[in-house]
Each structure stands twice: as C-alpha cells, then as structure tokens.
Length: 477
Image (tube, rainbow, N blue to C red; front, side, top):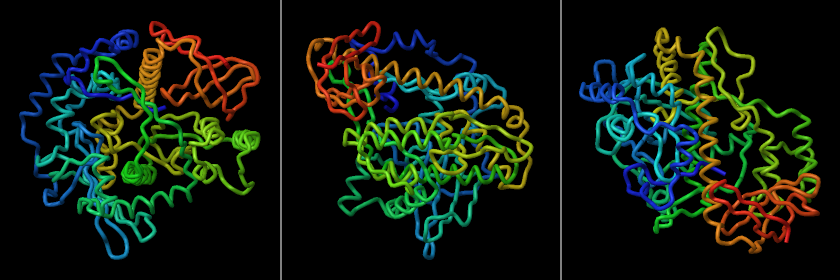
C-alpha cells in the first residue's frame, strides 16, 4: 500500500516486454522537460554557487541514507552527543540556488508538483541534471544546502533550532540495508552511531503526542529480471523509521517557526472526530481485538501486530482516522487548524525539495524567519497557490500508485484464474462483498461471497485477472 518504485530512468528496464506506458499515456504524465527549462538548468548549473552568505560547513562529516541506488539525495545527516542530549545536523539540498523564480524551470516544476514513481522509471520534478547531479548531495561533492541544526534534550525534545544556508560535503552515501546490518553488527558509521538513540526517543515522543501510524502491508512492484514485473511485500526496516524521525523532527520545527511568524504553508490532517474513533473501537471489538477504554488510538494501533489477520483488518479500518489530508497556506497569523493527526503536531514539508515542490518555498520562509528578514516576494506570491498545486499532484501520484499496483497484480495472476488462495478479509460490506489480502503473491483485491467478515481467514478463488482493465477479483471458494 505504498508507492510502487523501481529502477530510475536510463537503466534499460523501460525496454522490458511489459511496461507502464499505458498508464503514462492515460494520466498524461510528462515525458520530457521543455527545452527552455533544460537550457535554464544548464545556465544555472554553469554558474558558481554564491558563497558570501553561506556558512562553510564542509567540515561536518554528514552522510546520506537512502534506498539502494538513489541519486536524488535530498538529505544528509550527522548525529552527535551534546551534554546529556544530542545535536542533529541536517543538510537539505538547496534547490532554490538553481531555480530562477518565474523562469521556465520554475513554471514547469509548479506544473508537475512532485516526482512520480513508476516501476519502469520515474517522472522527476526537476531535470536529472539538477536532481541527480548538481543539486543532489552526492558524496565527496561540495553542495549548496539549507543546514538545520537542532539541539535535543535528554528526552529527545528540541531546545534550540537554527537554520541557514551553507556549503556542505557528504562523506558517504549509505543505504538502509547496509545501515541496518552495520547497526546489528555493532559497527555503524560514526556519523549515525547515535541515530538509534535519537530514533527511539523520538518514537516515544510520537506516542506521547498521539501520532497515528498505520501498520499496513507495503506492496511494491519490482523487476523479475526476465522482462516482467512482480509484486513484493517489503518490510520497513527499523532504521528507516529512525531516519524518518529526523525528517519529521525538522518538519515540526519548521512548522513551529512558521506559526510563530504567522506565515507559511503546513501539511495538515484534521484530528478524527470522536464518533470516528468510537466506530473504529467497535470494529476492533467485533474482531476480538482488546482495546482498553482509556487507551488512545495511537497507542492501541502501535501495540497491534499487523501480521495477525484481525489486527491487519483493524489497521485497514484505521485509515478513516487520517482522512482530509491537505495543505494550509497562511500569511496573516497562525491558522485555526494547523495539526497533522498522523504526526500529532503541526508539520511542514521542508526536507525533500528535489522531489516535492512545496519544500522549496517552505525552506525560504524558515530561512527568512530565522534571519529576521522579509520573506521573498516570489514566495509570498506563490503561497496561496501551493495548496492547490500540491493537492493536484498528490491526486495524480495516488492514481499512478494505484494503477501500477493494479497492473502488476493483473499481470502476476493472469495465468492463475480458477486457482484457490488463502486470504484475509480486510473490509466487508453487508457480508457479501469486500476486499481481501492474499499473501502470495501479495495482492489486495475485491471479493464477493456469503459470510465475509473483517479479519476473517477465508479461501478465495480467482475469477478475474484482466491486464487490459487492470482488474483482479476473487470469490469465496
């Protein structure tokens, strides 16, 4: 249930016998950048990055931690001990150093909104000359960055925040699997040896805030090495959760800065209504899941093992708690509704400017606030349009994700119509229709039949697997 990802463009996978070109065509995804935007990139890349107003932080041994093979490296991190607490250095690619406000690249980036991920190649927000080269925090290269320095107390709470433009140089490009292994072996890279300590503290704080996290199966599409594609369930490594906490911490600090200044743009998710929580509690009770009356949803969900069928059904039902996600721009004081229910705090996107449009603007607001300067005019002019632009790109990203997974599901099962599979009922309507999860291959699809109940273990028969319509359907066997 996450973005289907695969090799980047240019790896040769796009030439496979099965590809996702029909999805690109149907959704009108852009294939190339306008020549004017590409020319502008070459011009800006050729110019030296101004150093006069930038701090020289090239002595910090920052490292990047990303999926294997990633080239669009937005963030580099360093975790150090500070008295009884910690100091986080978090460098973010300074995309604004390469984008001329109102220029051809800026216009095209606003039209795209974000990078779209398809298994046979991504549709990048920025040309790869920028996103995978000149602006990417590649190891050993001096790069322009927005450098956050956040001091934490012994409980992992921020006590001081600083943000400024800087020059940085990553000393290593690490990936999640490698970092996980190094931590298990007790030989982590020195720059992130304290990441587990900070990650655990921040996870504890998340529970205290009431952050709602869903433990849903993460479907992904990957090459099968023979010209086709397969579905896999990818477990989330604990190091990914710890690394994500650094990004979330930075986004929360950014939001607090914006709210204090009365200007900015937040990522918001409204708090669930009491009746929504009560409905989820009733669903859990029907499934036989113990949920003490004084236990908030965040803690109750965190204590469930989603591998259990009934717990998985509860997590699926809990998606109703996080409806209404959007962006809130403001310029005349803090908005009335500024919370992100999934995080349990106010939050702003500032850590992925190579892949998401809004982050470039949010960073400029924070830099101006931290430096006691006026927010640039080009940012002020765009603030009101950002929620609509990001909302549109989020919808397209969701359509791309669903279509790619549906396509891969149909391809993986087209030769198995009539076979029976063990399944878990995720959703049920009137006991005769619903949605089931089949573990092998990992498929989520509609199902019909008598007596369907959420959390139930059933045997289902595949009755439809149509790649042309990207449709898969089961019935109770």
